[in-house]
Length: 271
Image (tube, rainbow, N blue to C red; front, side, top):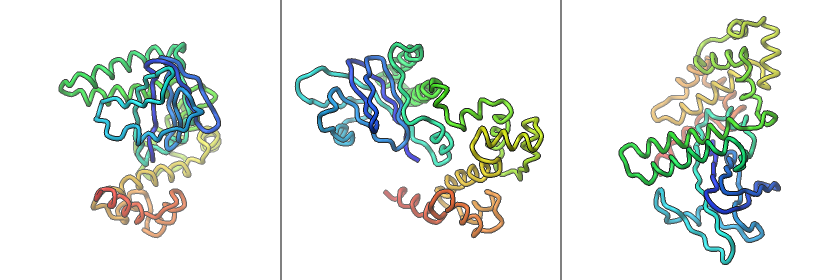
């Protein structure tokens, strides 16, 4: 699925470039970049950029990488990533490509406090420090997402804010294997069948059963990556009576076959 990338400017100033867009960032600013989206950060974007894997090659965990580009102002940046599972497609699709929070925004104060706590844990060497650091990093990501401008919120996140449609979404996610009918979901939302279907599609961008299919396929994709799992068993849990029907739906939505997912997961475990 990829990873969300979060960076906090700890000192100095720099610029962020994503595609054709640029942002000037100052100390205390933060930004979040969507999964699999390349970006460039630096004090002089007219220079030839250096790949991150080269910059961080040989750097130990929780240590800093230094990049000397010659004379000019320095900047200090702290970055992290949040790996997304296959089932996070709904979240990834709902997020804008880039979220930038400048130092003078109220959210930046909370983020700076969280970053200070994160650095304390990373440098403490205390028992449970890694667990605490991971928890704080999750809080940083959540804080970033909470501050998306309302006009940039994707349909899935906006739908969760609708009390009635949000209730039906939570019901689907809590029990995706249930034999759901439109009537059941409409009852959860306290709406008539026709009003629920129209309101759900308007909020989410998919009809209720189409959304449920995508949710089940996403969960099936995760299950197929587990060793010892059979396609037949996964197909049954996803509500399909035959492996062929499941395979057709799976490929239509993901672009690959269930067996290809299993083979890829097996190769990754061997590396």
